[in-house]
Length: 507
Image 1 (cartoon, one colour):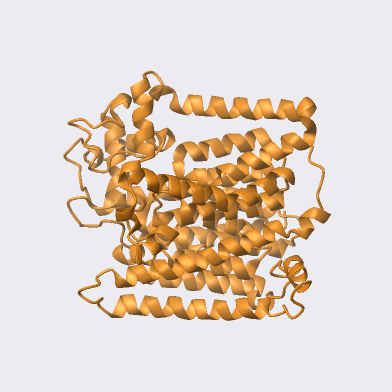
Image 2: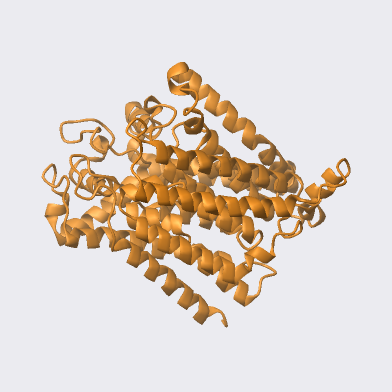
């Protein structure tokens, strides 16, 4: 109870920052004919309210899929339908079929911003607070500080409340799933994650760690006893939740296939916009999209993604633990972001969520990653005229982390959780003692590079022959960072001596 007043203040601070950012511009404001993600979300309300369910994902005279066609799972469509009923009650013009396209007004902006705010308040914020309250071996002050830093993470705030999306819904459900399976409420945790996956298909980034952790629990309890019962409960939960979410689209085979086609648009190619992953970075030097046929691109991305996440998943299955689960979430999500097919720049938020969950364990690296993840979306944020909110929220987040964790004092091998790895290397290289200093120098270089690139993008026009020079540089620099972080988190997973020492029995 003693931390309740402090947590209340933290929530109020987080909500105030969110609402302040929402007062700024949004994606596609005043930019016809397609506008932006704000219009996409409004248009989905228009479609779900005015058309029968069977037409939501099909191209018809009333539903032109080239104009922000619905391409998220059914739960997103149901959420849009719920919002549309409220919108219709307030002002039917907001969702009038055809005539509402590109609708913009202060009243409608207030309504749309409020829908994000309420969803965040109901799903994501409570999950963050409960997660921080459940942290073991952490003082009340530490729990409050951790909640503050997570709620001030600028990437999610800028995308949901600036650019305009509902990522806090899927990420909130995923966090409830993490809480559930980590605390032993496996059925409830599985249900929560199924809701996340049925809201946004990108939650597949987190699916393998959930699967491996729960499978490892079943193996540990014995597949001939309690483990088999747990496996059946989990299987029934997953099947039932998917069946209920997809029920309106299971009446006809073509309905189901059409939804799947919309969710996994292979025809869009390996990547679309400038995204800080390996394929977009390689494309600067080698036009991989032009060299390889589409099916080869799919196979190549699948192989690289699978191979990069395989070691961590095997380790988690054989040694299931809540700690290993969180780190594997980071590693797998980052592997998906770097190597998978058709990645969007906003997908880095799926990596940032599990990084937020280990912020109290490795504050220096986590803070660094979360800053880079926000920086990697800079071209998108500048396009939405969100420079000032980006600078202010990133600065506030950095100050909060610095004061909460004293991050510059936590760069020893022990604090970076690299001691086991360093000891192993020193068996062959006795002078291998410079890793913390090297990481510190890399961080300083990283900050300087991010500041310099931001200044260049804001103050200079790119060369006429290279109009995308600055966005490409941001993506390339960010991609190098993410490759480093992928290696770092995999090292922690594979050399996790603490997990080996403190392996607890999972009932």
